Image (cartoon, rainbow over the protein chains, first blue to last red):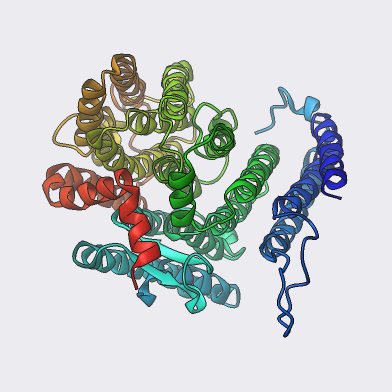
Length: 113
Length: 493
C-alpha cells in the first residue's frame, strides 16, 4: 500500500510540475493545488506506515496504535492550501479583469504602470 | 512556563480580528494597532530580562509536556527579533497613518498588518517545526493581501508571481517536514536536535537539510532572490518598508535556527554550500544595486546584499561571526525599513522614481537630506552607526576561520552598498534644485517623524552596542550550544 501511494505521489508531482511549467495562469494554479495534494499523501506515508495498528481510540485491549500525527498535519495543511488557492484564484481573476492577460508570456515587457 | 510568551502572537491576532468589525472607525484601527505593537515591544523587553536571569523560557500549550505538544520557546535570539519586529511595525504604522490613504484603511489594512506581525512573531517564538510552517503561512497569507491591496495593474502582475513562488517554496517546506518526520519521528525542534545528535547526521539527513536550505533560501532571498526586487517595489511605501524590514528576516532566522540546532554536524557540506550561496548573493546583489536607475530597485537590491552578508556569518560559524550576524540582523531590520521609508518619501515628494529626473532635494528638504546621509553611512557600516559592529564581528569571525574569500566579498559588497546609496544621495539631494519654492510639496510631519525615530534607533544601536552585547552574546551562546536549548525545552519544568 505504501508503495502504491508513493507512486501516486510521484505521478501527482509529475503532473503538477507539467502544469506549473505551462504559461497559462489557470494551469499554474491547478498545478499548485495538485502539488499540495502530493505533499499531503507524502506526509501520510511518512508516518510509520499506513496501516500498522488499530485506530487511535483508547480501549481496554492494548495493542499498537496508528500514528495520528500525520493526519493532524494534513488537516492543517489542507486548510492552508485551500486558503492559498482561493487567494491565488481571486488575484488571477482580478488580474485578468484588469489587464486582460492570463498568460505569463504576455506579461513580459507589459508596461502599464 | 510563562503565559506572556504567547502575547506577541496572540495580541496581534486578536486585534486583527477585532478591527475587522471597526471598519469605518479609522482612528480606533490606527491607535489599537499602534498600541498593540508598543505593548509587544514592552513584553519583549520584559521577557528579555527574565531570560537573562531564568534562562530559556517555554510555554507548553494545553499543558502537553514536550515533545508531545506544540510549544513556544523564547531564547535571547528570538526575543531580540520580536522586540525589533514590534518597533519596526509600530514605526511603519506611524508612517502609514499619514501616507496610506483612507481607501486602504477602510479595506482592513491594519488588520492585515496585525496578522503579518502575528505570523512573524509566531515564527520567531515557536518551538515546533510544523508550527513554524503554519506561522510562515500566516505571515505569507497576510503579505499576499498587503502586496495586492490597491489593485493596480502592476501590483496584480507582481503579486501573482510572488504568490506562486511562495506557494512552491511552502510546498518544499512541507515535503522537507514530511521527510524529516519520516526519518526522525518527531517535530519538536529540541527533540529533533537531540535525536539527530544521537544517531548522527546521516547522509539522508544532510539531503533533507538541503531541502530545508532551498525553502529558506527562497523565503529569505539567499541566491534564489529573483522574485524579490520587483515584488517589493509595487506595494505602497509603508507596506514595502514592512516587507523590506521583516519578511526576508524571518527566512534568515529560520535558516540560522535550523542550521545551528539541527544540522550542525556536517558543516563541511552544509555550511560550505551556505557560504557559496551567500558569496554569489553578495556578488549578484552588488551588481543589481549599481545597475538600476530606479531608486526603489536600488533599495531592494540592498536587501539582497544584506541577506548574503548575514549568512556569511552563519557559514563561517565562529562565535564572533554568529554574534556579528545577530547584530547585523537587528541593524538591518531597522535600517532597511528606514531606507525604504526615505526612498518612498522622496518618490512621494518628486513623484518620480528615476535617478536622472531629480536633483537638489536637500535645498528644499534639508532634514530629509541629512537623514539620508546618516542612512548611507549606517548601511556602509561607518562607526559609530549600527552597521559597524555587525560588520566588524563578522569580519573578525571570517579572519579567525580563515574564510578569506567570504571576507573579501563581504567587504567589497559594503563598498558597492556605499556606492549604490551614495549615488541616490548625489543625484537626488546634491546639485541644482529642480523644485521651485512655489511647487514645493510640503513634507508633512507624519512622514518625517517615523524616519527620525528610526534614525535615532540606528545611532542609538551603534552607540549603545555595549548595552546590547550581553543579550547578543547570550543569543549566540544558545545558538552555538544546542544542548542549552535542548535542556531548557526537554528537561526543565
